[in-house]
Figure (tube, rainbow, N blue to C red):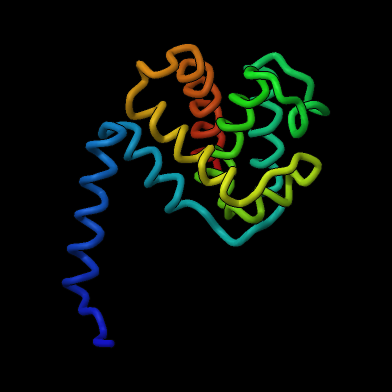
Amino acid sequence: MAESSPTQHYNRITTNVDKLISKHGSERAADLIESIALKKKPTTDSIDIHNLIISEIVKAFKINVKLLPTNKSVRYRKARESCFYLLYYYGNLSYGLIKEKFSSYPNTRQMVAKSVLRMDQIISLNSIDKEHYKIHASVEAVIIKFSNKK
């Protein structure tokens, strides 16, 4: 396999940044890139953001944190989808690690990935589920603000 040149890497980066902007808009894309750029090795800060994500989800969706992993109602499913998405993008957790964090729920890596994909769709086409999008966006704004303070 041939090695990639710096030009090829740059072209890949610009192509993916363009996709990010077209999918999420320039302001949100800038926030996402900034939050990724500021990430460091896992520390107590990453544990703080994981706890913040979960606590903000619980507050925004008005649910019981103990039932978040196991309750099968629509409200809890939507809360889990948002939580998985935020833990993946802002908490820097892989699908497998998210699955482990919610081990009391019979999640598979594929279910976590499907939830993240569904949230991507809800965000890009916020007309799919306006209420879910509105709640998710309010939590995401808190997480971005927290990430940018670090």
